[in-house]
Length: 193
Image (tube, rainbow, N blue to C red):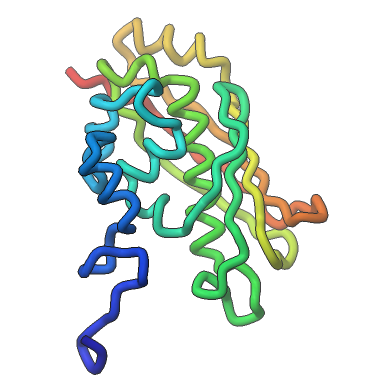
């Protein structure tokens, strides 16, 4: 229904407009419980789906922007925000909120790639995030995330019973290679016990 107090779901979303249809279908096929808290990521494995699919299935916001996952390794993650008019700002480029979500999603992808084998004993959580907008972003933008500490050091702290923290640095770039934003997300691995 349209009108005051009513919203129309996007064509690819369920009736509440909150879950893209393709994610709900993937969940019904046994690929995970779309929309559940991050702790449910433990039930999934790389054999079942890619890191991008895992993020889209467990973090609905990541699926909302139709993000495209490129290279994802424990050292580097690339995620692209396609040029989409519904996510534009007042000057026709990607909205700051969409760029923040892009960067945070790239950081989450590298965290899963680097520490996915630790999910049975710890939950990755973002602690803080800072973003600086450097130049006007127009068209599609790509976030490139890099891990700020060796994964082995982080796991060693977890082995010692500590709650390790580590930075992920993200550059957001236009197609021409110009850096439009820089972001840092500090993550922790919170032990389950």
